[in-house]
Image (cartoon, rainbow, N blue to C red; front, side):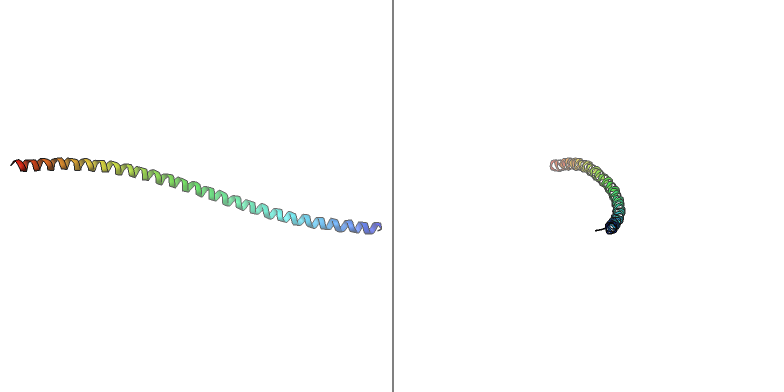
Length: 98
């Protein structure tokens, strides 16, 4: 093998490496773009999750408050019913005596 054949062989290998480098650079650029899109989507989803968590906490708080109010209302109604029962018992006693 003479010097020109060796130079041609080296030149072919250099061109192949240059093509491979270009292909890898394109793939890298495409992957970087995809990575940025994925990060942006992930940030949007995290923001959505955070907003949903806030809504869930607010809803749970409202439900707890409503349950407490209903409990208070139930206690009040029970007291009223107890008072009415006492009054009815008094009326029945009065009727039995008269």
